[in-house]
Length: 175
Image 1 (cartoon, helix red, strand yellow):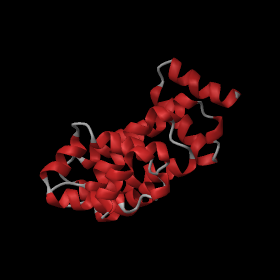
Image 2: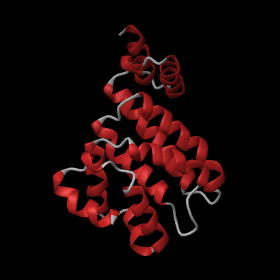
Image 3: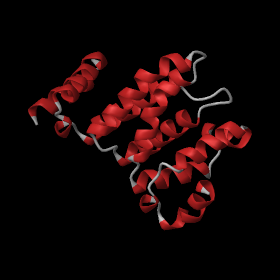
């Protein structure tokens, strides 16, 4: 508890670099359980923001893998907080679907692993995102390659994790 307070104290004092270093220290020691829900939220959303930033750059295929790996490792160690699920699922799905030119092959294995681990809430979030206008739906609606990639991504999801209200849409995507 005292350790967590130190991390929070850095954030309260405006020492962002020390706050981030403190969170990374907890992560390296495997002490994620000592982080507050807000700190875990910030770690996941921060990793998603950095990954999306790299993904949207012109040289994304070369630079994306370490950022995808970082998000994969982070979400393997901590449960994604409910408040960060939309950012997490949106980032993973958008990066996995890629763009007209493809998907970063070296990063794709991390996306596949994260999709396979999607919880029922994360699967629900994915289908909710597909019902809205966003970069994922723009890509899927405007590119045959992205639609095919989304279909392949859907096939990675365990049908048991698909909420009942999305079963029909899931079956449509996976047939």
